[in-house]
Image (cartoon, rainbow, N blue to C red; front, top):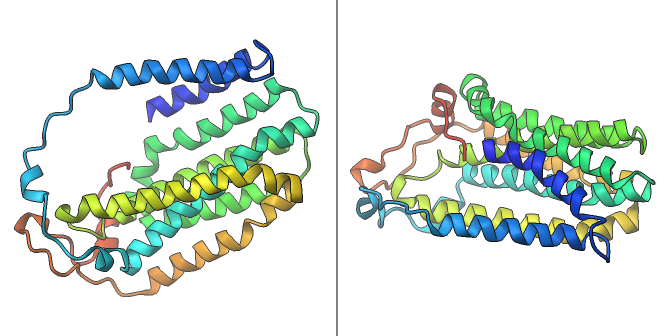
Length: 280
């Protein structure tokens, strides 16, 4: 979480520094990213993760993958997190292009992205407490409302205030919806099913994020900034309906937990309201 806050401050600053450094424009920014990535790789190569004492116990068993994925809570958690990630990536990627087309300076666009990334990561210090207090579905619903607020704010114009306000709402909305979704996901699998359940979830989310990132420029060019954001409304409405549907369903225990250490609460959604969840 602290790394995300540092990135919010340092990333746009480095992009702003490297933009006019070399020709063509932004070449310097990408070279700086490459150097930072090499440094990070060096740090990770020297990092040793000790083997988990329970790794052998949790390595096998559990239900078939299809039974895990087709649970209503799993599908809603995945759809919610993917919605937050996809909407955020699409709007964030298009923002600097839209701002430059609206004749804002590169430094101004970097400041907006800085505010956005702070909005993404600063709430993480208390999102877990909000989930424990109000429940994961309510926090996810708040994330959807904040993302709707982002869309409505984009309709207010192309000025700095409009972009900055919209991107802050986008960042905080992503935080609530994505962390809420990944927290809800932990209620749908036993420890010996964790690797498969999280791998499918993460792979799906990042594929959607990749598709949204690549489509941002084309959608912005074809539709324009305001219209591109309006297209996201049905996606968010579907996410909200899925939360309402899950909230109205009775909670059921997870069956077939073959490992005695793999017990889960009889009511996973209620259990998430009683305890402070980990930040995924």
